[in-house]
Length: 305
Ligand SMILES: CC(C)(COP(=O)(O)OP(=O)(O)OC[C@H]1O[C@@H](n2cnc3c(N)ncnc32)[C@H](O[C@H]2O[C@H](COP(=O)(O)OP(=O)(O)OP(=O)(O)O)[C@@H](O)[C@H]2O)[C@@H]1O)[C@@H](O)C(=O)NCCC(=O)NCCS
Ligand SMILES: Nc1ncnc2[nH]cnc12
Image (cartoon, rainbow, N blue to C red; front, side, top):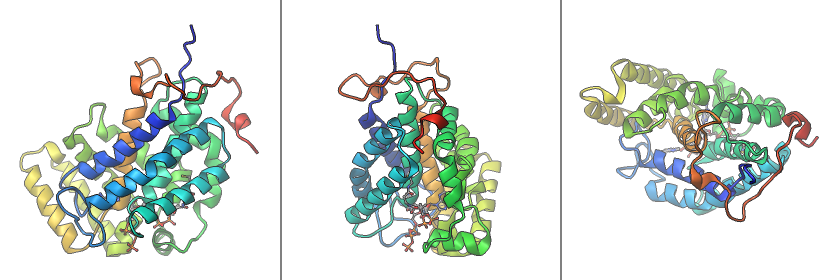
């Protein structure tokens, strides 16, 4: 009997879209868009995000397949540029998911790579695969200045941009946000995971919209929130509503932290705690999905030059 695990790239993409939906659906996120309101944003609402998620689904499928094919970073980059264009097309030019495309694109590709090895992904393995396969390219582009809000803020204040986070293997995501989300995510743990991201992330969206003092303030606010017991504490609902009002009054939106939450939800759904755990049957490739023989070479050797 063939016991190899196979890649179902469409199921990986579905997990990515579900993760984006889970983040959107979480209510009373400070300054962020949900089904309740548009937070600090005047140019987008939940409908804008839903259109964006719908447009991104096929791109996540391709990211997973590119990873399975051991694609060079340049191919991922091109796919990311195309996904951004599709997002802007679906949202009439509004940036809903630029950060999420970058992070989830890399994670989908790493998950695809691991399935192509005939293995079940664990979070550690996803991180290691991403760095082994594309770490050198991520490092090379990490400090390249761009004409973007994020890059300008990072250069001006010496911040850890999304590109630096990626080059270092997303330490905020793997070391802070994913553990805070826990093995059985609930609205309480999703909220705490979001705040865990805010405590440490140099969120350039916050800086672009509110200045550097806003970043200092939101990190302190998030630390205080968690120190008081987080979303499970008595009175947390009221406190969250109050924080939401404060962020909206200052037009602050921690969009980068929201992307970290989506990425953690994706990892939680696609990865097993250890390779011996049972695999979510939806992620098994039992239809026309890609199937690959187990490879023994190192990932670095398999990556095209
Ligand atoms: C590498 C790119 C993602 C470009 O990144 P860059 O650093 O140049 O800056 P931005 O163009 O500003 O985009 C970065 C987005 O990442 C999120 N983010 C911010 N800080 C961090 C951080 N420290 N770590 C991780 N992630 C972070 C954030 O995304 C969220 O906020 C967006 C909404 O913000 P908003 O203010 O409403 O909109 P703006 O357009 O910025 O402002 P206005 O004009 O409206 O006022 C929302 O998208 C959230 O997702 C940052 O926006 C990338 O563009 C790139 O290189 N792409 C090419 C593809 C590629 O290479 N792919 C590789 C494989 S996947
Ligand atoms: N819910 C949300 N609101 C605003 N910006 C975001 N970026 C990612 N998710 C977001």
